Length: 294
Image (cartoon, rainbow, N blue to C red; front, side, top):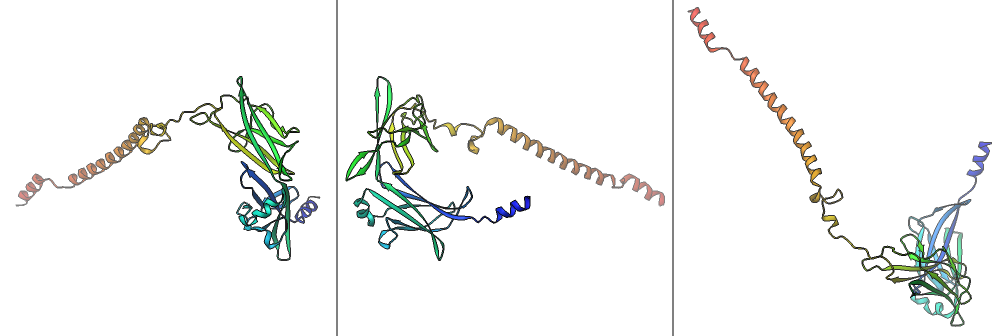
């Protein structure tokens, strides 16, 4: 039974796939992230050095965005060029097409359809209650319309994620496209002036893709930077700032080792001299022996 199971798994071939994601940060120029992978069942592995061609709305030469190659992690980034600005502005909805050259006779295709959208963020502080107001809007008939039922994360921007501003991990916009999140994270460390970065993020929305907006506010706890931290005598300082007790220990060991070696050398020299002196004949004895012979 084990042999049958292994042979069945070996017969499954890894299928190359390409993923395409749409991003807009702080309502600026949108960009695309491309990822090439091999997929076996539910497991995916990076597929590096793959040539991928990206188009806007149709896979024709005049709609070419970029022809790129994925890196060692199977990822690449693409920005809409200036030559396609008129086509981009002509419609509130667009479809991005990515084609990966899996073989000369075939290509693997991925598409993503997005509607132009943006996020605005505002803050308020009334009677000591701090709130974050976020609004999501999408473009329709050359006008910005509120986007309802959009799920997002609102909070403090950290390196790997967003720390929720309040008790809820996610928020959903109402009929006006707005959410109001109460800021409950007091005494968070900020920069030297107490500034922290608030963020609202929409992740992998079926209509709008990935949206992110950030805002800096003085709602954190000011942190002081000790510029003399690395000038003190600590274990992580430079060699010229080594702790005195560590220097004493190191030099004591060095002195003890070399002192022992020098002592042994002197003893060897002394033994050698004593041996040389013992092998010399006595002068008086030699003179007495000579007179007796005469």
